[in-house]
Length: 233
Image 1 (tube, rainbow, N blue to C red):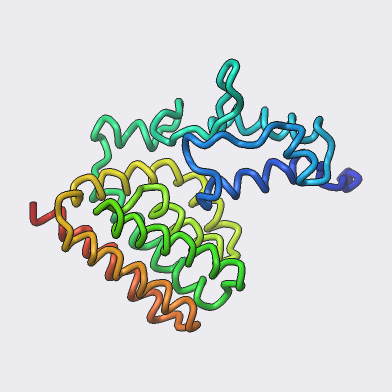
Image 2: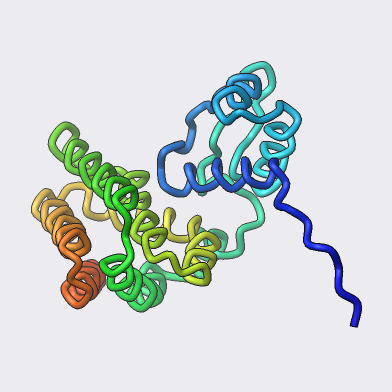
């Protein structure tokens, strides 16, 4: 058996991972223009070459897009090409109920683990998404897909479980499209949206108070509520 020398992680890979996490956590939002290479390089104290390599990789994955003469923007999950999960949702091969069945297992466990492992930074990320959801409902009578998805992704990152995080990264586009479909159907039902916001507050409260079972049950209650909402219509 031949052993190979261990190579340190390339700087461009670290830049890639940091920008990718900001996209998944909703810090960089779909449609938002990111800083030019030069400014990113200064902010992250790395070379422009490292930033360029990271951005090119993100463009290849479909997370970012170059717009001629305008700059680089975060792409919308709905517009990304080649994602089989998103394609399945778009053609109704997979229904919102199919998605919710999968989320029930993944996310209830994620909430339980987050209650055990969340750092202060994780709690801030979850809280920021929650505050954004509440502000959108107060100002616009709706809950935005971006803030809702960011909330669930922030809970996942708080688990510190690399397998679960990997699964949810690959699940992200499907989660985004599914949540958008759910919220669009609830758009005219203020009572349902307020109930959804209450669920998210309960999930956060359980995670913040380090109550794994309460967090598990709060996430489970939320997803089952959405399931029943659609099954009754």
